[in-house]
Image (cartoon, rainbow over all chains, first blue to last red; front, side, top):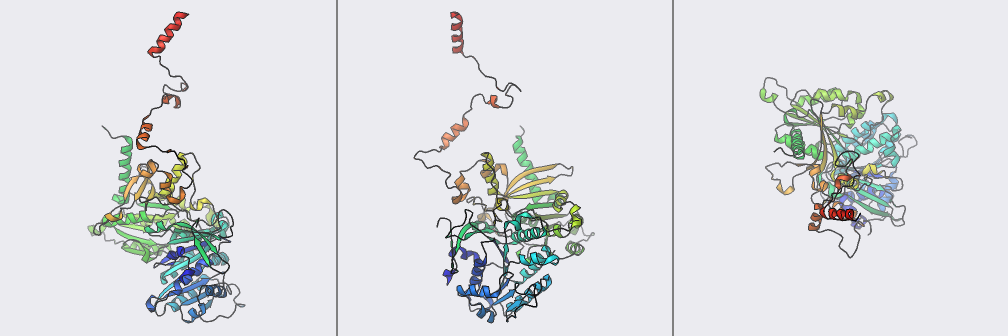
Amino acid sequence: MSTRIPPLVESYLALPPSSLVLITSVLGASSNWLVLRFLHHALLKQGEDAQNETKVLLMSFIRNLAFWRENSRRLGLDLDKLIASKKFAFVDGLSGLFSPNQAPTTRSGEILLRDSELSYVSGELQQSIRSLSEGGGKVIMIIDQLDLLLAAGGDQVSVEGVCDKLLELRELVHATVMTVSADQPLVEVRQTPLETNHSAFLLGLAHQADLAMSLRLLDSGTARDVSGVVRITAGGQAAESGKSLERDLLYFVGGDGVVRVFERGQ
Amino acid sequence: MAPPPSQQRRTHNTLLFQRLLNLRDGASPFTLVLDTLEESGASLIGEFARRAKIGKSKIIYISFSTLRKRVPFEIDGFVFGRAKSLSILQQEIISHIASSPGNPQAAAQKYLLIIDTLNTLASSKPQHLSTFLSTLLLSPNISLLATHHTDIPLSHLPATQSYHPDPLTILIYLATAILTIHNLSQVVAKKRARDKSLQEPHFGLDERREGILIGLSGTLGAEGRAEVVVEMEIRRKSGRGILEVFVLAPPPPNSSIASKPTLDNVTLLDDHPLYSTLPPLNVLMGDGGGEGEEVETTFSLGLSEKERRAREGIVLPYFDAQRDGGASGAGMGGRILYEMGAEDREDFDDEEDEI
């Protein structure tokens, strides 16, 4: 099963205590495959010892559970079974965030956000972290595209507010993985409130992160056998030894969900 | 004989920097550290903390973005600054500072307040920033060390605040010492480009390539482990500023004995071996960056050490003519310097005779 994780990436998937990994993506170089590898790495190798068990809370703002279920199945991960055994919980920030009345019904282990109010969102998250960590084990929190909440939440969601809540949540879990878009207009233009807030949020996170994995398209244009480049660098909070990890790797996502990661020229 | 000016500057400025790091008798009440994603100021803060520990100062850490568990050094007090009003925050910080005026020992106790990032305060309460920071400095025994990430923009401000000065401007105005952090390999790469009159390379966000946040700093080989470039500006009471650029290098790992904490080495950037004399490019950029730089021939195009020394020893003639204005003053730059030798004189005389 370990062959499903590209060996070059594997060493980065281990999450030290209280760490924050920031994954940035651009249009055309999506971060889903990397999030799935983090899920796979955390959930598949389970020991018998209940204290050392890893549990995952996944919160996604632009993809629902059906998407994650489908794609994890290709990696040999049965999310429904993991939900039943309380090793995985999903918070859906897509289906009902702005249309609470039309939202589909949910099953246990799946929480549907019905409001974009910040204290409500963090309250729901705290509750699911608590219910996951019952019975011991480490909880890893993965938040997919929290920037949507910042962009769409209106005046009541501020950068400082989101960062405050995020830090509160990070205190509760073992480690955190965040994915945020880093398209050029969202990072550098900084004219409208949306642009400045996104940029402040993203760069603030990068300063707090231990590891930053930035996905981008190939600089020299599209190629048939390369989907993009992942740049792995130490974030602002990394330990001294983190600097030696820095590298650019190419990756290719095949139609069947298989990912190859290789160095230039390989 | 007095030491040469370069030596004097080296001793003087290194001493100033050491005084600053050791928080010697109020060398700087408010030290501002400016860093970016390219090089974090964490190692410099760590060095301050190590030295404060040796100097028996108490360290109080005020966190806006750091988890309690992740503070990389021992601290005496921790204040969580998030989502608190400034007056409550101020009270909490001051409660950590023991104030017993009768006890001379307690009164002499030195404190180092470390703020992990000022960006949060600068965004949320820009108008109270200066008041807040100055109220923390209650006595001359307290030093404040605060980091500001210069690459994070302020989140959007309401229109009423657009007439206030930028918080960073206020911070730079308030600070008594400003330490700007740079990445050593990037500084060296920029200097190499400057020396060849090429355009300086950009790194990270400045590359302006979509999807790149942090530049690859390139490995500097064994000695480039974790050295950082620190640009120091100390403001004296008179208002005179002293500028110098240093390289801060952590002690080699084998020399750290558990009982005795070791300190970082401080050298002037101009004295740093990578900066002053330029190593071949492939050494500098690791194995990947130097490709294609060396022309492949069957001849040896390099110089041996002896040849290099001989080349450096050569004094080209009439150097002074190339200087602006020349040796003998303005307007004489293009003069032909020629002194008649004995042979010339003979020739000259012969010609004269023939005529």
